[in-house]
Amino acid sequence: AQKVTQAQTEISVVEKEDVTLDCVYETRDTTYYLFWYKQPPSGELVFLIRRNSFDEQNEISGRYSWNFQKSTSSFNFTITASQVVDSAVYFCALPNAGKSTFGDGTTLTVKP
Amino acid sequence: GAVVSQHPSRVICKSGTSVKIECRSLDFQATTMFWYRQFPKQSLMLMATSNEGSKATYEQGVEKDKFLINHASLTLSTLTVTSAHPEDSSFYICSARDGGDYYEQYFGPGTRLTVT
Image (cartoon, chains in turn blue, purple):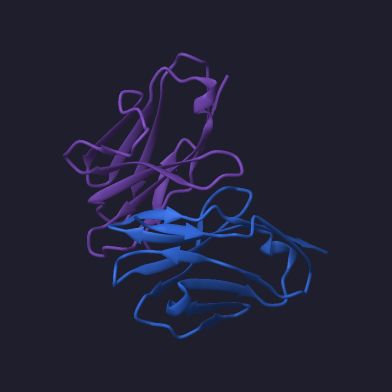
């Protein structure tokens, strides 16, 4: 069975602070992908990143960066210099045959 | 890029009535579509998987007679909530897979259902 754990239910930071969202996963598959999505108040899921289990290189995209560590089954997401527009719910997901197992999500609030 | 649409975006219906939600893949053929439900402040929970031309596979605990899913073409899947009740009020999100990528899925914008 697959499982995704996002232990942080809510995080509140002040603008310009860095923040890291944790994601720990469980899978028996040797090949798998991990995804991060952002869900703003409108509800629509916004794709952020997809990572292959064979690629443990960290990835940076603007203010966003991801740290994938297979040894600890973690795929953490860091926002540098957070902005108010980053306020949203963030989900980590583990797909299998297309259907995804989602973590419970982390609600990030960035205050001005 | 791959686009999935849902219609309607919001719907309010009276208790006891049925409501249909459409999910369309606009620029690709979706061999498989998925329906998720999300209650307020909760995660997305998979309800069912539908493959074009065959019966949907429902997750444990989801009433297949209440949530009717039809995937009649490679670009359209519908979810009908029959005899809706207030507890069915939720955010319904569909996603679609084009068959070329085992892991990728494209999400629709969601439909907010309110049953009064």
